[in-house]
Length: 116
Ligand code: AMP
Ligand code: ZN
Image 1 (spheres, rainbow, N blue to C red):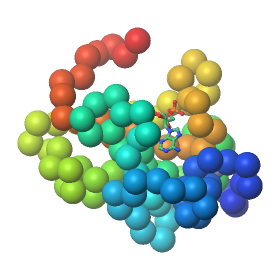
Image 2 (cartoon, helix red, strand yellow; image 1 turned 180 degrees about the vertical axis):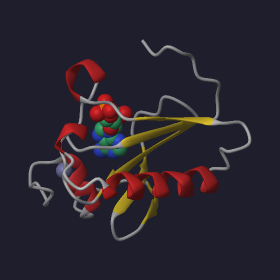
Image 3 (cartoon, helix red, strand yellow; image 1 turned 45 degrees about the vertical axis):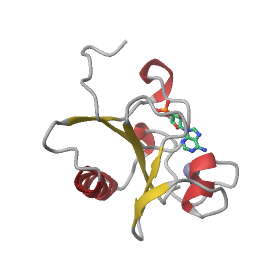
């Protein structure tokens, strides 16, 4: 179920119960600076609804909402000219640490490929 999960860090950020450095938000999504940035710009985009992993998403319109907010972040952070990376980690092999889906938007330096 996509509802608020009381023990979820990102649900608490979405609800304003834990402070975050918010870059943009609307009624469905929140974008905030990563607490441990891996690039000069490192913003996380989350839905306000709780989905633990990408595999738990039942309403795929959430993807449209996340990418619409990602586009706002790209505009606000002026990332388009030089480019940027959008990443979503899923479960253990994907390197997912927080069990509430999120996009990472990384910019401000060249990225390597493939990721480690
Ligand atoms: P992932 O490994 O894809 O689950 O990414 C989780 C991200 O959340 C990591 O980049 C962390 O640095 C970030 N993070 C964890 N706690 C917080 C927090 N309280 N505020 C902002 N970012 C956080
Ligand atoms: Zn959550």
